[in-house]
Amino acid sequence: MFYQPYGQFWFLPALFLADVLFLGLQHLRLPPQTILALGLFIAALGSWITASGFQLVVKTFQSFPYLAAGALFSQWVIDRGEKVRTRVALALALACYAVVKVVSPFSLHSHWVNWLLTPMGTSAALLITLCLARSMAVVPLAFLGRHSLEILVTRDPHSRTAGARWLFVSVVGTKAMIPHLLGGTIGGLLVPVLLVWATSRLHFDFLFRPALPFVSERSGGPLQLRNA
Image 1 (cartoon, one colour):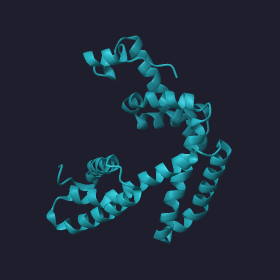
Image 2 (cartoon, rainbow, N blue to C red):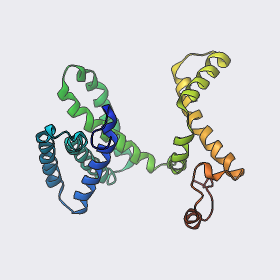
Image 3 (cartoon, helix red, strand yellow):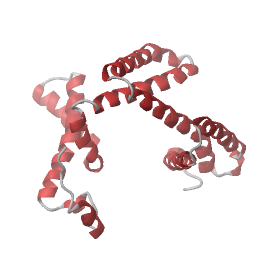
């Protein structure tokens, strides 16, 4: 399974190995141009060893230049976004989003359009994130981020979607998309947080964190909902 994964299951281990390789090259303090050049060489090497049978190695080598280019480009956008005012960053993000909305229909007819959509969409997402980090919205978002593991392991998207759909269709009497999306999102975030709070009050903290001595020594006690 590790060296010859089935179907699409190559993605996660290949992504992990490519990320480790990229971090190793960054640790050597290589310039971005050198990392990208090595990425192209590694991708070519992956194509050359395709016949070896080690599919995971081949996929890792072939995926590496995309991961390296995305990581370097994202860091470039963040470094420059942190130097501009919030209004400028927001205006740039909206401009990038507008380009994506206008150009995206043409991606069905030309594969090369994706080379424009990918950096524009990435820039918009990163710049909006920088704007949120400078606003009061960072407080609730930071709270959700600190409890992202609990939200992940306690959420059940199928039951949340079915519950929200039943509530809005049977009780409220609406089939509009926006209420369904908002209800499903709020339920998917609020219910896990409430469940973590309830289990913490009942001293069932082991449901989300291992009850090991070193965990208590480092965190000062069992899992609790921390103040944002």
